Image (tube, rainbow, N blue to C red):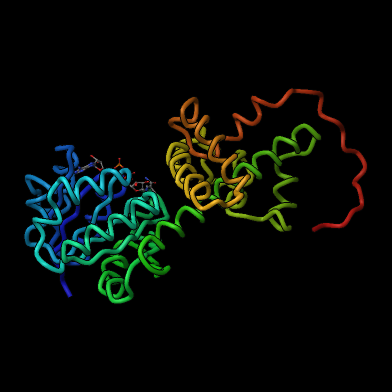
Length: 313
Ligand code: NAD
């Protein structure tokens, strides 16, 4: 069934997502503060609105893809979107935002007589372009069922994670695993270097042993073992370090607020924040290995001549 959709935020992610909704036969009206992005979206069939309010007036569904929670909340409230939309409009926020902000957004939307779903994504710009994103959603089951066909027009999988904020919760928990595991894999490669171990040897072992993870086998932080990983193109993103720093910051805040002893998650948030503010600003998050290497004290690699017997975990 074709829907009338307002799409607010036509940046790196929102632009191609809106285009995929048009491609699936929906009527999409878009708005972004940047006129050039609006013009690019129009080339793929998105009708350009003069304001966010104008975009939502005749929409069944409003999709937002904005930088942070404050943008979503201020558009909903001060920007007048909730007042401008028809009764019972479904607001689907796909931005990655704080769990508390997501719950506040749900409250504001439902108090205004509308329906709400938080539905952040995993898969990056490549996934947005190819419509292979994974959506993780929070809200009522009926609202998820209503949104699911639209989510699947922009992605390959949509998981209903629970009530309001559960999608954001799943997103930041997943990315906390990812951030910690990238630091772990990077530290292991730098340790291996200091022990005279080749990258390929460590990769061949860990990728088929208990150290196996996405940070190693898909986004390997050293060039060579995984030809498609960003390390092979001088750490061009990929998943940019500032976005990882943002997601880990959200996870660390949630851990602190909930009294969770997430020592490694909070440490990883600090490491990526420092990296993203400095040389990592334009790099893939796997470039963190360079910062780890720089902070390490160089010494002569030891020679590993005799393979050691030992058990594996
Ligand atoms: P982006 O900065 O490219 O796009 C955000 C857009 O929102 C911008 O074009 C901006 O002009 C627009 N915007 C801001 N305030 C607005 C307003 N009041 N009205 C209209 N438009 C407004 O960011 P992005 O990379 O597309 O990311 C969007 C969201 O998706 C973020 O929350 C990010 O964390 C999340 N995300 C990004 C990626 C990725 O790889 N880029 C992956 C997963 C999730």
